[in-house]
Image (cartoon, rainbow over all chains, first blue to last red; front, side, top):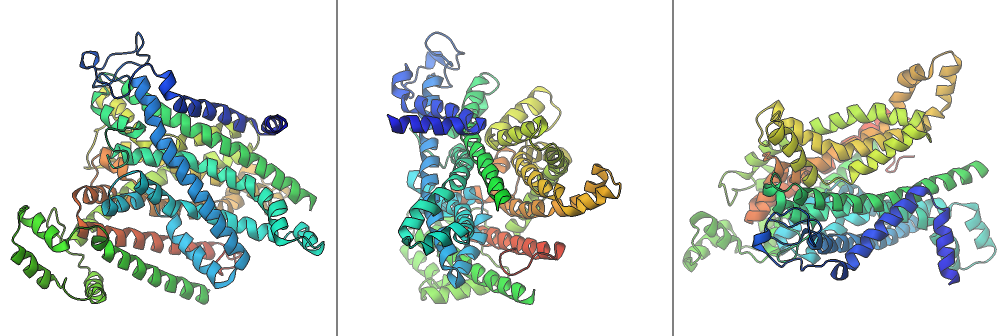
Length: 285
Length: 315
């Protein structure tokens, strides 16, 4: 219980954009998790007599070109892209932070080499890497995660390296070393807590981009594979029916936008506070 | 400076060699037999003559050791011969050159449009830092980043092409066909540029030379235009180079939706059709361009701003 109250207190201290994003993002996450409970219909059950119907009755958002319930498809469709985007981010953050922090500590030729690799990869559009990988090993969940991680770790490596260099040159690290603290203790007590906020800010800020890229590949027919569907694939299917039933185009687009924006807002809130505390530190020293 | 340039040149050559080796390996990683794939692309015959396959294999040198094949292939690449496309049976190099031109036109139009809006908006946001205008600009920028192109593009087509009939819905035949795709593509760089410009102008506003200019009686606007802009714009130019490299192949979705014959669509159709020579050619081309553009940007950055010590990592 005390842990929970601490989390709530910590949350209330954050910038308002973080709180707004958190509320909105949690709502979306809960909706996606609880999809089987909330949606009254099967997302793949076709009912051709209900084709392109507007909202009404227990079909809250109407039906698509095959008479499938749009609300149910929206809920189930979000799962694929959100899971791919989140999983990719977790992998990218872990790999990038470890590599970057390690480079910052060892320095020298290894550091130079890895940072040149980062320079090359960082400007490489994720969607192109994904297309090449799909051409070589075929589409699928694993291909998407691999492709997005392959270039996704680079910004985190750059950030973590900068933070590692910055932190290790600070007086409190020198003080801790003089006091005889072990390396592990310094890492756990000083380095990780100080690096956590900027890295998590960047994580949240990259989420929207990942989500949109996954959707783009699905839109092109190379992401999620039938019978599964996601928001990008729904947009592609709905394109030719846009004039007759605009909701089919608007609903998945707005779903992507709301999800991306809420996580981005969280990242922005964290970043604003990171800036503020950095300025405070700079002002003191 | 010479050492920096030399280092960069070595990195460039090594990376390009590595990338071309990877590109060369592409057909071997997937389980497509090149000889069979070529015959299939030419005669569309699934039950093919195994003697013909063998003959082609010897003719193409596929029976030679792998490294030997790589160097023969690399030699041809240096002469600008990237082979024939499986689908169109035209030289890959010609098609890529044409597509790069189209993509560059599209990318530059979108990026300059973004720059034209982002520079004044970012500067204004910096001047009004922490106030309502600044907050609104930041929020709109986050919104722009969250809009998927494959949603915005059909909606704009629906509005401006289908409903109003002002602009063509797709194609590549002049200025009118450029407007919608450039507008869709410019939103995300616009958001980034304006945020980078804002951050860098905030630093500029606190700089001593602005204070000095103002104490000589120059107004804020005058001081910013005459002294601030030149310094504030540098980080934006670095981001500009990154985006240019990214958009040369990365605007796949927009090019597919608007049927623009650029790099993105070329790669997309190569993937769909399993067109190996085209994929190899575009990998080399895109990575090569990305590296060249970024290296140029780094060097230019050093030239524009002599205070930066050019030794690998700035400052």
